[in-house]
Structures are given as structure tokens and as C-alpha cells.
Amino acid sequence: MWYDNQLTKTLNVQYPIIQAGMAGSTTPELVASVSNKGALGTIGAGYMSAEKLEEEIQSVQALTSKPFGVNLFVPGHNDYSPQQVEHMNAWLKPYRRALNLEEPTVNITEEQQFMNAIKSVIKHQVPVCCFTFGLPEQNIIKKLKQANITLVGTATTVEEAIENERAGMDVVVAQGSEAGGHRGSFLPNPQHQQSLIGTMSLVPQMVDHVSIPVVAAGGIMDGRGIVASLVLGAQGVQMGTAFLTAKESGANNIVKQTILNSVETDTVVTNVFSGKFARGVNNDFVKEMNRYEGEILPYPVQNQLTNSIRKSAASNGNKEWTHIWSGQSPRLATAQHVDQLMDNLVKQVEDLIRIVG
Image (cartoon, rainbow, N blue to C red):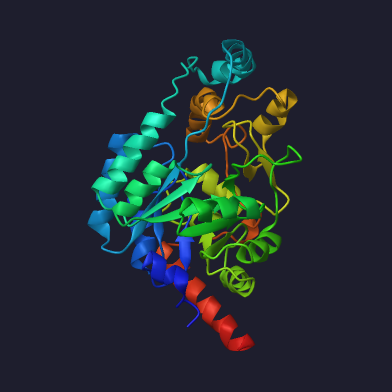
């Protein structure tokens, strides 16, 4: 069977499909629905407080007895000056004035938030813990392993995949350039550029250099993408945008509708919203803030400075001033319930395998 492999055994799921973390857009209903259909649902905990994560984990556990995961952002070490913050606030002032917003206070609590999340994952015996933006320290990996938690890392290059395996990850996600949302890059690039290797190119090269299961991610929206990924050597797929527009997704309606009405040429990779590069639908905020390229503050500072602008704009139905993360295949997005989406994916894969087999 196409779904009987090392990945499904490692994750203890029926189908080799992972719902991407999508920080800020997952709901217990989304996560549990994906898991109940035999795939791996994932709580996008990147921005969650300890209290919110505890609540989400318990809500998911009340809705499913199947395995699920928690996706965390590994803290970075970024330098910035008060003068840089002052300049950015000046550039953001027109947006805040238009939305009647106060200037926020920068409060970096990344490290403590991450450690609290790790404690919650262990305390509630979450089956799978996924990481992006890098790798946790060895003492954290050891604690999670001792708690029998399966670890999933993210890589945008072969070198990053090798580092994931070396660190002790059980599975590595090959994040191609087509993927929506934040890039998981964490190793310096010799060209000092973003690692934007396409999924079709990245997956087979990664498979040839690591022994842990590789999961393809980036632009995969239907059974064709799943079968293509398996042919390239991946043992499964991670899908974000496909689940972002699902009925159970917590994404704002303006986000869902924008994706459903976008085309493949509409997305760009930008760091203006959060300070980390991410793929999303191009809009006025991105175009305007591109004027300050090279002066965008690092994550999470930039993220905090633009947060209220993005939230207020989204709640007001203004798609031009908020982030709309999307992969490069928005034409394939649908507005279905998770049950229907999963049934369709499985049927499409099995129909394709029957044809080519």
C-alpha cells in the first residue's frame, strides 16, 4: 500500500500526510479532524502563550484519540538597536494612524515561551513535536526523546537536512520554495540569499543524503502532488495552504477568500511583516515596505511592530495591509470540510496509482 512506509510507522498514522503548523490559523477542530481521518493534525503554536497552548492541547485531546503534533518556532539570536526600532515605528506610523492604533512596546520573550511550550508538550504527552526556524539544543531533544515524543524538523537545503538527522530528528520536512508561510531556513547561505530550492529539485537530493524519512512540502494541494512526491523519494507530504482554506481552519475569512481568488503569479517571498522571509500574496503593504529593504528588523521584533496593524486590517476586511500566507498553487485551493478534503486526497492518490500501476 502507498501509505505503508517508515513515515507512517514513525508517526503512527494511517496516511503519510501532515497538516502544516500554520501558526495563528489552526483550531482544535482542524487538528483533530485531520488526525481523525488518519493523517497528522498539527497545532500551530509558534505565537501561543503557555496558557493558550495548554488549552489547545487539551481541546484537541478531547476531540481525538489519534496522534497529533505541536509545531514550535526555535528561538533565534538577533541583534537590533533602539534607533532601528524608532525608524521602523516612524515608517509604520501612517498605518497605525489610519487604524487608530497605539505604538507597541517591544517585548522579547521568545526563549521563555519556547521552554514553556516544551514543558507543555512533555506534560500532556503530545505524540509529535515539530520544529521550524532551526533546531533545539541537545538537552531539549534528549528530554523529548526520553518522553517518547517523535521529532520532526524542517530543512530548505540538503545541508540543513543533514543537520536535522545529526541532531536527532526522526523525520525531516523538505520545504521547497513553493511553500506558503515562513521559510524554515536556518543555516547561512554562501550566497547570502534565501534558500529557494524548488520541491521537485530538493526532495530527491535530500533523500539521497539522509536516512530518516523525508516529507515533501511546497505547492502540494492534491493527489497529483502527493504521488509526485512519493515518486521523487519522499515518504509523505506536508500540506499547508490546502488546509488553510478548509472550513475548520482558523484563518480570517479575508485570508481564505483572497487565496481562493488568487493565481500562481500572485505570491512573493517577503520579510516585511515578521522579519523572517515568508511566502504570501503580494499586496500594498509589501510593495510600500519594500522601500526599506535592508532595514527590516529581525524576527520577532518586526513581527511585534506590525502585529496590531495586520490584525486590525484583517478584522476590517482590508487584505492590502495584512499578511496572507499562501503557497504557489492557490488555483488548487478549495473551501471544503477536512473530512471531504481528506477523502478526495486519498481517492485521487489511489486512482492515480491504479492508472500508472
